[in-house]
Length: 333
Image: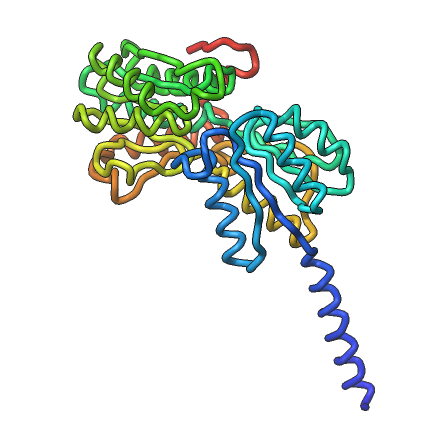
């Protein structure tokens, strides 16, 4: 073999070895938050991101839908014992269980969404939900004819108050004299999966004059959006793009890109670039936004889109400071 041919062959072997090294063997898994994998919202967004990874790479993933807290820890530990990695823990309520399990399996990778777990093998992904909520609040105020808007949250926790706070600030930016009704569905995890109560809360707000209602309630929000649509009012979806649930009757959806978080976690592990630590995703990072598609395009006037685009740019630049309820548990306008 000539020296040139030998060098080329060796180079080819080296490149193949580098490629093989870059693509690490992964056995991904997901433990969803309570409320079900196909909640049309938070959990389903994670599933969509994982499915995208599977279709692109051919790598299968395992998943589990818990009904209670005990099942969360059991599922995390079972996946870990089976050598699954990375394992995604979906939702703040999994933090305690993940703290235990991740410490027991220091050689495995774990990702938690919506909470911070400070361990060297845990990747924590949190979002600036208040920034996206500001934008849909602004749009909601501009669309409202009654000057009265509503918010229905799921479980009454600071994270959901964070959505509400940004929403109210966005409304007040457009209409300082607007009236906003706020209700939380409950104080336990069951609040994420009660569409009947979600519908009842939305109806009570509509009876008081609300003509635009935003939900941050997981599966409960399906009832909120249905009640608004049935009454001829406008709903605002959350997490996933929910515009298609009631085309022409959902003003927009506040996108929380948990699909991107799941996809990136799995892909980074496969490509050798997975890192522990905290990632905070807002408008600037593409972690939150608002949805515009064929299902709601007729509802968004050029003036509304221009206002939302300007507000988005001003938030990214720092000209507009959206208050983060998590920082001091207060909502200031």
